[in-house]
Image (cartoon, rainbow, N blue to C red; front, side):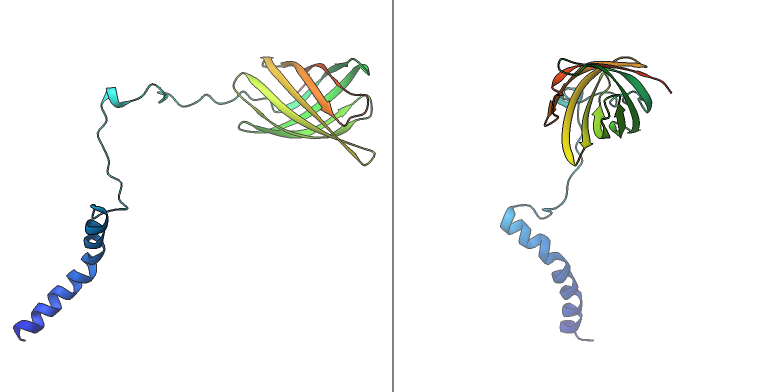
Length: 163
C-alpha cells in the first residue's frame, strides 16, 4: 500500500467522526455542546430551597365518609362520600339526603384537602368546590361554594370516616 492510501484510510474516519465537535468548537466555542458535566458542590453551594428530606406522603383518606352540610337556604342535610385515593389525587362518588348525587375529583396535601364535586341533577350540571381540613385521621371540616346549583349556595360541612 502506498503512503497516500494509508493516509486517506486513517484520516477519513477521523475527519468523519470529529467533524461535529470541530464545527461546534468554531461555531459555539464548545466542542461538546450537548454534554452536561457533573460538578462538585460544597455545602455553601446548596441553596436553602433544596429540601434535605423527601416530601411527606399525604395522609390516607380512602374510604367512606359521612356527615352533614349546613346550607343557609336548604338547612342541614346529610352527605356520604366514597373516596378513592392515588397518592395525593382523590376521586369518587357522593350522595346526599336531598337527592343530589354525582362524582368528584380533588387532591390532598399533608394537612388539608381540596375536593371539587360535580353534581348531575335533571340533566343539569352543578359544581360545588369544598376546602376542608383533616382535623384528625377520621374527621374533615370545611367550607364550600357552589355554582349553578339552584338553592344550594355556600356554607360549612363536616364528615367523619365510617370505614
